[in-house]
Length: 463
Image: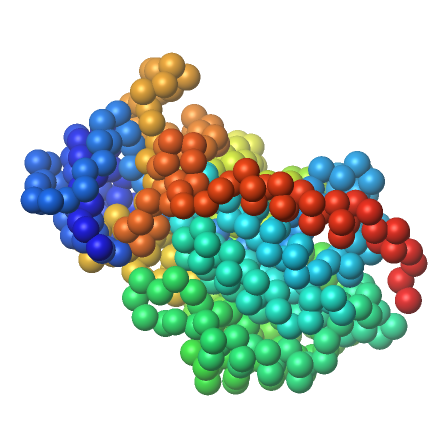
């Protein structure tokens, strides 16, 4: 692979350990990694990218999503803000249970495209939609989509194992046994998990949530994940605590702690129900939290006390969450919303979370969450995952004083100028590289119409 020289960038925001910002500088890239950053770099025969007027940032890292939900966006029949959580679950799962592998593939492509166009270079997805129509193929189809678009993909092999008649909210068509779940995790790890630096695919064991799984699903995940060298993930502290207390006599985090589903190789999504003393438990164990601001606002959930969590030492990253509760796969938008939420929350409490703090959550803290020391910042030896924003636009005039805080504070949420992943340009000047986007979009629309829009059984009662 030829070297690439990103030349004359207006600013390079590294998000490194000293929070360096290079002005009017270059980045030399050799294959998948950054070779050097500085002024006046040269490399004979390198492909030159003219970055005059551009701000350069580390690629964003999404730590929680549900790609399969992408084709239920903007449905007037399922308006999340106007429904209670239980009403939403009752309505949405009637649609989820009819999803097939064509929906999995094209909804994943759609999500990846949205993420890439808005600066995301590494994405984790919590794939728990296994229906009678999909069988065990969803992650395989997602890996196809990731390879086509060239994005780093961490696949969370989710699953639900507690039947509806036994107290979960999951229809029978989406329920597996613990044995099925564990066996498929082993299969996927053998097929796709690459722990080496600059790897493009990894597997995470991610049972959906304790309230919708049998206890042995979580209990048996812990030794298998550690045997295979896989990280673990689940939803926690998002309204299930009362049900878990009724079932096990303890709060969800305590239950996870007792069975070992906690540690530096574990992170949880949401956690807005957690208490201050539970934040300290997370920090003591090195367990991270993926904050998803958009669905928190839409659902009217409590705002995370990020200042308190940071003071306790909790690693906080950012996620878009599923499109059924967000309608977007735009991590720049999530950064903006998270920043505004924290400004509002801390107005009367003193000392907010800075816009730059939010950027680091979406970059270096995301890399730490996923166990990727090779990602998250722009430094020699690290992966060439980055994006550029064209600042020579009228709408940005007068706002270029501070590149570190620029994105969330100014509200830069539109498509970026260029996205590079593993040293390869995958998006530039409004175009995804190497694909026929119009053709794929038409195919995706046709699948959505066939499977979801025309499905009469989507609104039938649960069995």
